[in-house]
Length: 319
Image 1 (cartoon, helix red, strand yellow):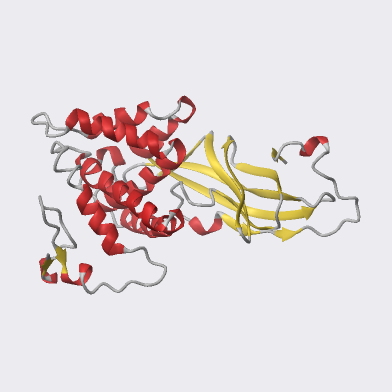
Image 2 (image 1 turned 60 degrees about the vertical axis):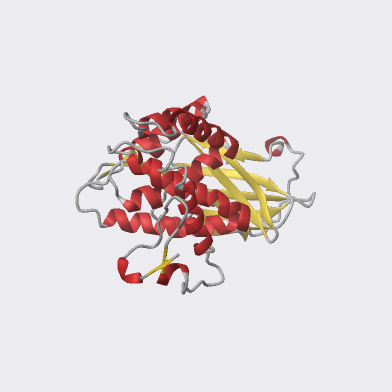
């Protein structure tokens, strides 16, 4: 159903109808690399049939984590099935920009996602980033189990209505013990990261493989509601990746326990790029320095070692 643009709404969900504004659902200009926003917004509004129509959040802090963030996540998963993970990651670049811009304009206090107070840049943008990252860490089926159990426990519930603390309990149960810190970082606090690649070089070995040396930094920051940041110790599982012309050559979550990072990675194809958190699963204020083109090391004239030597038995090792 089309509604006039001057009403000021993009779209909203009714029991059997999804009204769209004229400018958004009918004459929206879509560029080639853009996600199909009409489909995305439709999926988001349909998701409200569960998150806000069946599970009705109490009018307290964190209410829009249930109604809006879960609808964002549901829509992201629909779009991943329709368009693929690469398109979703491209869309999340926009979400990251919107979140960072929104927090820079906050006039009262930024709240953790768990306690969001109807702040769109948090429940839409940060929420989408957080839920997609959590899915990447624990798996889609684990998130589905948590949401299914939360829905079964709270659907059509009268007072006291559902709240974000209940939702978090179900999510927490699906997170492995070694990754429980994710709950605090993602939902209970405002945690940011500063990942950066400072050097990426490769050397071709005599068995035809390539040894990539990757150096960089990984810092973890905790912010208060006014944006004051404090660096805190890092002991996190973070993606380290190497990419070639045809795609991923190596991608693995490694436990990083100090800010200075150095790894040697063995890959079978010619490396083109390497990165720390290369897909920006973590909320990083400078997202474009997480990857770097890989250059060839100058030939030192020494015989090139093969992967059979002791220090290269593993596919990845610290420098």
